[in-house]
Image: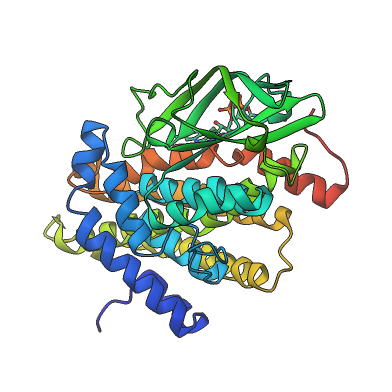
Length: 389
Ligand code: FAD
């Protein structure tokens, strides 16, 4: 009999609407045509045509796709998750670009911005004509962003921002940076046009993960902004955390895309590769690996779809997103590493996507809340005790 695909075996498509499937298939085709032929080269050179890609992703309606109005597509959250999955099956860097643009930068402005800020930025960002980044993490404050040192002080009607942000996706290519800073009233967000004097964004080099993604430092050296640059809708850490919840949701699906691509590659390879006079796929040890990995992929997909439906129903609790982010990134990286063993030496090169995905997933495990932080979120939900400090 013809072998089943891992997710085909779980029949997860029966849980999708026709619209979900149409969006998923459009993104899958885009990734096959425009990303797969080039991504190994981008990864090896550590440079990616971010502006062209953003424009293409905007034309497909994938930027801020689950937001309503201002040129955004207004799809379901589940459809957004499925798009993230297909993008990350291409490369986690591509999904990161879309997550940061749509769920972090655009969402911050959409949810907490003034009408003027929304009109100025969202239609251009949705179309892919303007790129956004999201500056929360600092060199000394990652898992505990509340300690941030970046400061915004008032000077007459103006705001003046000083400080450093670190590990900022899209930083060097962004037109607008959503920057979070301490003020006398608590943490506030600012929409900072990146051509403002005093703003610079040197790119971080020598990464061994997410090489097909731009990662930067943001330097804010007395950046003077008009009073209208502050996001009026929120004060305190709830502002950035609300955005991270959106992006994390996409990662719950996205990480599984990388895992699926590894698993499909390893299964295909095991059928072609002859060892001891028969296909590697015909050995029990190989089948045990494939069976266990497919189970984890399918279980992760069922969890992702369940969280998607809860989000679409408006009842998703951010701590439930932690369940999905923790499980699906952790299982995805295990799957990637196990798939690499099936390819043997061939698994270590860029000829196959597996090592690239495995290395990318190291970042995915760390950003948007590390696995440890999500364990603590879940632990607090289940015991009532906060154990962060
Ligand atoms: P730390 O916070 O220093 O953590 C180090 C270790 O300590 C981790 O294992 C962590 O889990 C553990 N730890 C922390 N707290 C506890 C605790 N209470 N108990 C036990 N263990 C603990 N940030 C942005 O703002 N915008 C971006 O666009 C962005 N893009 C990124 C892109 C990439 C490629 C990467 C790698 C990171 C990006 N980040 C971004 C930063 C990311 O969010 C942080 O790296 C992350 O929050 C972790 O912070 P840290 O690296 O400072 O690690």
